[in-house]
Length: 382
Ligand SMILES: *Cc1c(COP(=O)(O)O)cnc(C)c1O
Image (cartoon, rainbow, N blue to C red):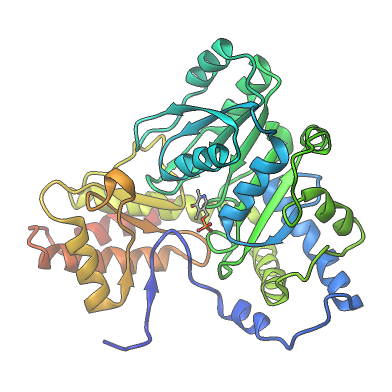
């Protein structure tokens, strides 16, 4: 095996485009120099478009979880009540963060592999009118579900005064996102998934309503005080030293997305999802999610007649291809393929073909090429 050839087919970190790698290797600049202000100014419109908002998108150094924690500590006071919709491991993380910050966090647990429904949320809010914030996950990476956040946000607005707070880490930039139109109050993402960058940045954007609530929240905070980032960003600056190399990369990522066109980016992800799902169905592999709930960015398979972890090991050892396993109670029971960011139908044809070989090696009897053919047919019919 070629030692440094890696096929990263996990739902984050994802591969980096070569032009983005080159941009990140630019020499360092001073963070108070005019070049940094120009860079921040250039980045702003692209980020707004990705979230579908008029608001400025804040950029903080930290992984996605830092963004989730910042959302929790800025928007909710100790002892206030919140509802966390848990459709998998990342909903569960939001709940843990709320608990760590002494929030009375209710859980609405949905079976893993299914999406939350607006009706379930409505019923919960009617019984608990004191809830001040509703936390949810857009794409639940641990299962490959895309939650119907626009409809849930509508219900939250209709049946409560709560803020709608969404973790969009594994899909913002790959899936249509209209924060303002959908009435989302706080939206968070990270750099290492659909945004084609290394880990290290988190992005947060807040509605006017959320800014009002946050300004009245006296909970102590310093590095994660979002108001300081907002004030500085208004002057094309940051309160502390930004992760400049990642910002150089981000500028190029936004150029690439602009060149392709956001609608085309979203279509490409839908196509990859459809190719992948048809291929797995043709290979008789049970999918964890329904067609209706499936995310365009990650697909989970729940095998019944072979070990998901054995398959992953063969793919890694023989082809240098990383697939993701299951989290929590799905550990060892599923494998997940990431198809987001710097990823195309050509990659789908490659990973399906490698998975077919690994299936054969793991002892599942399949007809070689059947999955690839199904994916090719989806491609031709689009
Ligand atoms: C990856 C991910 C996160 C953030 O994880 P970090 O490891 O902190 O970057 C949060 N939410 C979802 C849905 C994710 O997929």
